Image 1 (cartoon, helix red, strand yellow):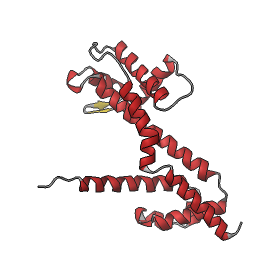
Image 2 (image 1 turned 120 degrees about the vertical axis):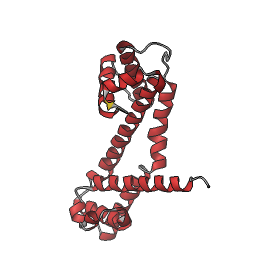
Image 3 (image 1 turned 90 degrees about the vertical axis):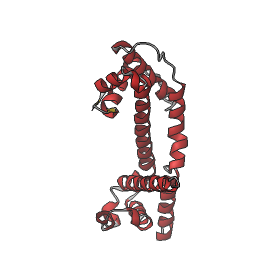
Amino acid sequence: MTNSEGRRKAAAIVEEVFEKTVEEYLQLRIDQPIEKAAASFEFDAAAPVTHQTFTQVTRDFVRHVYEQGLGCWQEMSAMEACAEAVAILEEGYEALHGRGYYAAFLDASNPELNGLEYVLAQMANYINVKARTRYIRWVCTSRIELSDWPTRCLIAEILLKRWKSCLLPNVRACSPAQLAHHLSELINLVLSTNRTVNKMLGAYINLPDF
């Protein structure tokens, strides 16, 4: 492969990765199906929140969102869904006075917080974040991690040149060869920076007139 062919190949890989991880694409592929699944979940919001109902609702919610929103081909058992719900709440639930499964149960029992709806909304958000992370990792692995060394170095060179302004000084000081083993992390850094900048710009554009 000539140097020009190698550069074209590396550039095509970079374009494909960013095409499949751009915010609009992630919203269409990840966010919208999860939001639709969460919105379609039904439960008895008027029922008293006991440990049993809390366990049942969060378990059924996880099973529903995974099957309808993530397209899981294998149906989860009740035990698997229950364990996943507990893990999600332990890892991703944050309340004003605590975090984790027990804090979620206390919030679900609080009528001022809309009970279980408040908890399920946080669970859906956590599922969404994890799904995005897994998907981006898969895109990077399938397109980049199996590339040969020269291609990886060229990809790193393209990333450094194109997104230099988004990178920290210690990253910009690295050579392409130094970053060739860390391309997934480098791409995630660029994506995260771009999203932060876009949010800041969006907030600025939408500021009310005084």
